[in-house]
Each structure stands twice: as C-alpha cells, then as structure tokens.
Length: 144
Image (tube, rainbow, N blue to C red):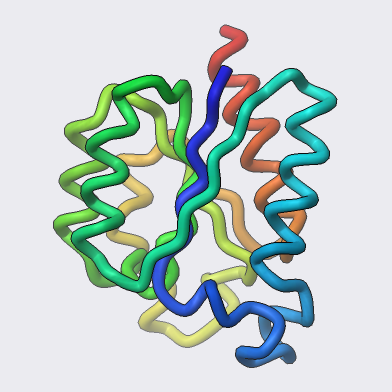
C-alpha cells in the first residue's frame, strides 16, 4: 500500500508559525513520525508540500497512478478551494482530510470545509497525531 501525504499553504512554517495554535512540531517532525508508523504497518508514504493551489490539484489528480489513499492537510484551501474539491471528487483514490487544530473550535470562517463532502473522512484537533490517525484510517479503508 502506498499513501500520498499532501500539505498545503503555510505548513512549511510549522514550528515557527503561531505555536500557540500549531505547536513547535515541524513538518519534518510530522513526516518522521508518520514514516515511523508506516514502517510498522508495511505502508509506503510519500510527502509533498506546496503553497500553490494548482500544484496540489495536480498531485490529487495524479494520485490515481499508484497510490491507495491521499492524506490531505489543505490548510487555508480547505475553506476556499473549489478546484481542490473538484479534483478530489473526480479522483478514484480515497482522500482523508487532516488538520492539526480543531477547525470547528477556531474562527467561524474555518468551520466550513469545502473539501469535507468529497473526502472519505476528516480528522482534526489532535496536533501532529492527526496525521498518524489519518494513516491508520487510510489503512483501514484499504483493508475492507
């Protein structure tokens, strides 16, 4: 099984950006944590990050070529990107939406996820562990 982990805008700043919300864990720390978990599950993971909406859309579209699932932290595009939503809807590869913070406990504009209706599920509010839970969910989807 192979899982594509996609990270959207500003996630490259984890560990520096708003540590009171996102903590001090970096994206590299999260990648290491997920890779370690994946190794024990015999799962291959590939990590990517972009601040560009079109690049994320392209990666979702290309996931059909060899990936069993996509874990997606779309960052701010969660609440704004119809293009990303449409790419997920058109993909035969299940996508799991992941967030570090609980988006429903934050500003009201973050309460609406445009991508949630076309994702298999959503995990939010568990910090870096949200990614590990997402990986487990992806494996459970593919075990059915």
